[in-house]
Image 1 (cartoon, rainbow, N blue to C red):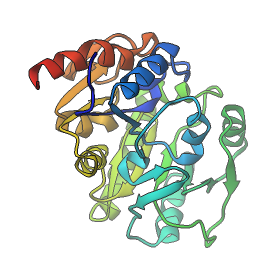
Image 2: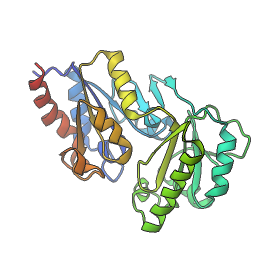
Image 3: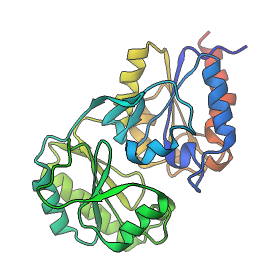
Image 4: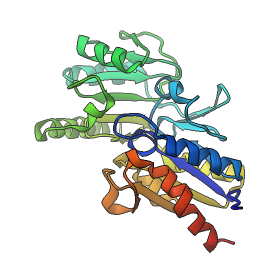
Amino acid sequence: MLDFSKVLLTVDYDRTLTGPNAVVPQRNIDAITWFMENGGTFTVNTGRSINTFGVHMKTVPTNAPLLLFNGSAAYYQGEYVYTHPINLDMWTVLDQVAEEFPELNLEVQGLYDHYLINEKPEYVAFYDAIGWHHTSAKSGDDLGPFIKFALFGKPYKNAVATMFACSDEELAMFNRAEARILELWGDQVVTFRAAPRIIDVHAKGVSKLIAARDLQAQLGKKILVCVGDAENDITMLDGADYAFCPADGVVADRYETVCNCADGAVADVIYEKIPEILRKHP
């Protein structure tokens, strides 16, 4: 019988734990359950908020705090363990971003809700179709702690996968927007790109890796294993003891790969890779 008690496994959610259709393969769920039953510690390490991940909490088994907002917060048993707000005036930032990039969707991802700043019909339809609760907000509204804001492009269809299809023109626009944000506030914020048409903005100094390493230290786990697929996972993967990527991941050329995400990439890591790792660490 394998003993996984030395291992903390943290994995990205979209296109790592899920397939491209946003559904978690049953093979992953079965593997995670078996991993935890045999002493392993598992959690999701995602850029998502509790508002967008919370609907999946009953589907995905975990036994450690969820690492949310690209490491800006941890959430466990119905409460936030910690948060790392952006040290800037929220509306000074949001008003300027909205003025300079009116064609992009601007939202604040709060602790319990998403707030649409420049609400447009296509974005409302997108949120409604994928089941994300949202509230319209205007300059000066109290939205709670300034944990994260995000920019994303006009949905081509009502599915998260629409954020991964990007023309050269759009990519150049998103690159300009990211560069401008860092030019203005780079001493206080860090940006992540979970997909070509998404810019996530967080407090300087946070990352998926820092969140995972802090959790590892708190739990006293010897080995940190991480799985991810996209640009915002790079720091986590680079800093893990062992890192893996689905074969169809955006950054698959940089890391050891397992099967495609739709086929149960996390299950491959649990069934095949972690036993190999444990043989190196008796």
